[in-house]
Length: 452
Image 1 (cartoon, rainbow, N blue to C red):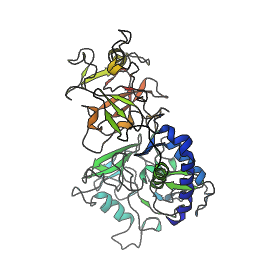
Image 2: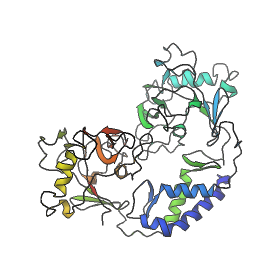
Image 3: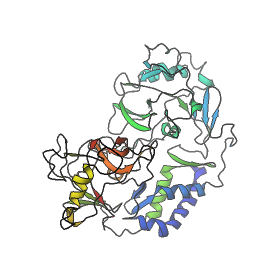
Image 4: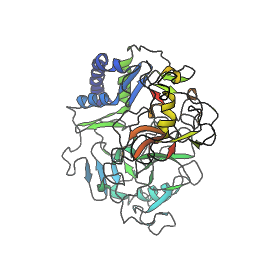
């Protein structure tokens, strides 16, 4: 990391300078957005990126900045990513029916797009077809490395950074080539044919040695799959790194990169002495609600016992709007917010019929939380609902202080900008953020203001 030390010092100085005027206001309240936190407060990612780009403004990269294809350089057999220094295998053939090797018709060509492989045959160790029939062939293990793919014998599966709740403590290499800016598959065409499905990483989730992380290139979703299942694979190798050091997850500009781990460290230094005006415990249980002292939001606590959900009206528990098993529609059939999530849930909490004389927890401004959506369907709104997702233990992915919860999808208030008849929902089974049609039924949890 010696080459990055000067940039990190600049980054720390920038962040310390910004703390008083920007960061202090977001500690314990303000706009939620995406944040990195320590016990002292929060920092919006947008400010991190701004500081990183300033810190990298004069950085020099050891690779050719004028590569013929900009970020990606096509060498014929491989693709070099000049932002990360990684060299990637290009796939061949035409997309057809995928087949698991060694039984598929194209298994004699390890680069064929239709080939799938197991990660493990034994259940945990990396001894499946992805090693024996894919990487060992690329690295010419049988021939002693005399005929390796593209002249290199160090091909491997890319690592994954894991999820926020279950970080893999490894570089986010596979995530770095995801690009959902156009139609699926979520990858630049220069990489050759690609299936809109899950590709293996080399990384194992911290909570499950029998699973490995993969990325779904249909809509950029992180998947923890059984290692004995069959998935696609794309090989990678280390190239010349811009700035040196471990890759990690990173933010880039045209000049170079800074690993997120170093940014977070700098943020924590910048916030070390920042006072928070609120209780330093993150979650405070008020009885009926939960106050999140990192975001300032106040959340409804659910009641009852988690069982099979029933749609309101008509469900056995619909008379209690706080009951965990109630399901509601977002819309009655169009695009307006006029479904039972409003009329039978929020309007009841806010005592619309009674003129606000008997609102839930003495507040009449309850609403559905916003969601930032996903890379393929961003909403441009704060990630409020995502901010309480916690998959560090068994599902549902939420702290027990919130009361009973269902391992399923919860409505947000955020309409998809491309498809206004859909809304972003958040899964409290795995933390994913798909979209859903507004007339469908999902669970709800209300939120209000900034908790003040």
